[in-house]
Amino acid sequence: MVTDCNYIRWDHPALRNGFMEITHEDYSNSIIAFKRWNNEGDVVLVIINAGDNNFTNYSYGLNTKQSGRWQQIFCSQDGEYGGWEGAGNAFYEPYTQFDNCIYINIPKWSVLFFKLL
Image (cartoon, rainbow, N blue to C red; front, side):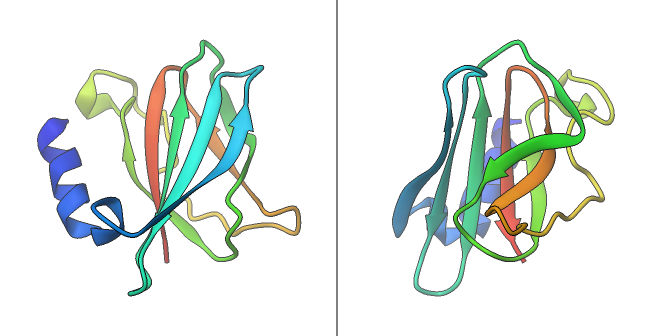
């Protein structure tokens, strides 16, 4: 997992420098998200679920404060890291909706990264 996270960090310069904005705070579910971006167009959304709730069926609306289509590039609860298959959003690329949210799966006790396509 650490190796994969290091590759993601080097593949996305916005994670090493640039700007940061908290886009979503949900204290009742222990979820927070922040966006990192740079002037070259690299945008990465980091989502942290520090709670016991497992959101499935693309039911969780997460504010991105950014229009566009998103692709998951990391989920800490994927099967290869000791979690379960289907935990995240593989093969699903949500668009930001009219309410500035993407509707995604968020596994319990997880960290997810999405990139803006």
